[in-house]
Image 1 (tube, rainbow, N blue to C red):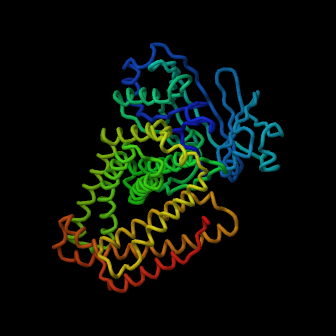
Image 2: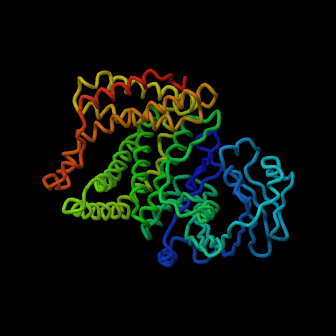
Image 3: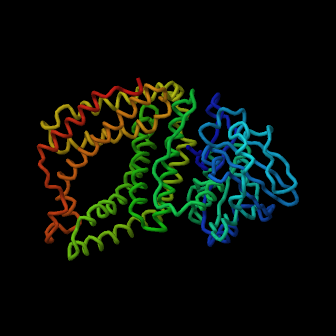
Length: 501
């Protein structure tokens, strides 16, 4: 299922400037709360309320799996049941949230909400899953004439004997300009480090119910019919940022190779999205931000290269050297993630994504307003044409040109995943499966070719090329055979019917 990231800006499709709701969620360390509160950014007095929420679901968590959450929250003397529909099917309802006053902790499941119609009698068998207890302090801040409500939540999610702490800020624009939210966010970041939140409190609880996750792969992106190209880009970019942030958190805690890999994949997907939507993104900021994302992906890439090499090395000097190099590479990656440059990148990118000039530039009005389905078909055609050009005769070009074909293949694969939900009838689904299958084979073949071409250079870059056994870490496959295999795989991709047409 596809969740809407918590860094979200919701705008009516009828206007690019009207705002119905805008909110940023920022995570901070509980150690930094006092420094933030003493910085003078918020009024001296705050309204404070304690909230205690119980989340319910079926034995197999059917509600959450389908994009629904059910909670009963007590604040003061009042109790309110809230049902939210956040998944891909939420758009079939006239609204996405149902609130009902209750007197106790027993959920009301009747025809005043959608649970019976969606799940039948199983909806009546819900049981408590976890609780969320927080203390919320709220201020009203005036920033450049805009009215912003600031809420500081401190507490925890509880599942039996397991706990997950919460310390986060929510900045909600009540009146004024969206850009002023980011002005305030930058002022906060100047006082304490921040990270953009991507998990709702419900998601925190259901993740706590699961076994510890060591990696988060890209989640499906589901578009409604009629989604504009502008909103499609925002959804895709937000999905990539979410994947990065979730894996970044795991990486910080576990130094896990797969979470590092997926964090890097998320950055590559994000840069591919910027390239894919280039007809709409003509501003210089898009290019600058893509360059910053490349910087970060490159640092993670150094550690990833060593993660790939180490399992191939036999015990001894070579393996010990590579392990030492990997420790240093992970330290460099974590330093980059903690750097002011990284924090600036996340702030700048989110600011640009939600408030950037590309959203209202006159020169791109036509392309950003066309239906995403039409843009997707044209973009996939362009990507396929580029791959065909660079892969026309792999045996007649050099390694650099074959690498260009490899990058083209990645981009069209990412684009296919981004836009999959727009092409879902039986014929398109069948064609998608065949196309992606052919793409996977092509990427494998081009990957082997790339390893053969770059292996010696990679070893030398880590200073281990001359150590005994280093030569065994790189591919010794027959290059001409690999080229023939890659050419056949590329021809199969070109022969596969386009699922978007």
